[in-house]
Length: 346
Image: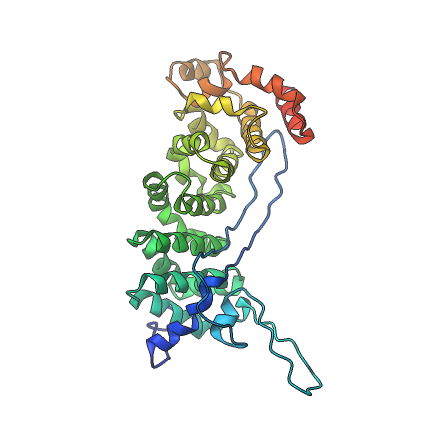
């Protein structure tokens, strides 16, 4: 583990945890946005970091220069000295977090028996992981595996913060090599969690980042039906996130055979409707465009037609309702949606 065992240098564990007690009041929202270019009718969804959120109320005051001030994601303004000439504003950033602080936080995370403390520590680690230097340090300190261990924590709020922290850590390609082993566990969380829950949303955000490049997309071959089901039954926020993963996967020609063979709910076609939220409809059209760009041989098409309820029959076969629904969308008031539809139909 880097340079030895992780040992906190503060004499009193409670005193150290006090430094992160107010972290629940803040969150980092860090996005790496990748343009959704439509190339050969294929798009890859934006690589979006969820950032790390907390619903816990603030329990402390940020002190300039404190560990909490460095990792909370909030600007800390030192008060202007009375009669002082300088009046400098000191803005502390999570990017300035020292390596020993990360070690202390990881040690506290492993030893804490308090749910609230675990949430706050994970929040703090997640905020710090928005910076490349800390992403690398967390990997070197074996922090990824320590954090991922809390995917099985009995408290849902801890699992949410774990997913959010891994999401920021996942912005680093080298870190993805370690995080990918937890994909089955993340998929299980999606399956077992309540629909539209923060757990499902956090898990989908992590999978979005992991699936931006082709390298790890094969790990999601068996999840197409799950993702399509979420698109059908979920609310808009979760629909968008599930579609981002589907768009990423469908932008890879090597994934297409698995996608079109997957079982799909027939009702997914009903979402191609003017009443569907534009953010959802745009991604549905991108996904459909990727599917339409795929060309099956006559033999493969015949085999797929014999597969009950597969995505090919639902969206690509001549018997599908998709074509007629796309024609109706040509009169959609949103110009971008009109343009997407026209590309698919031509």
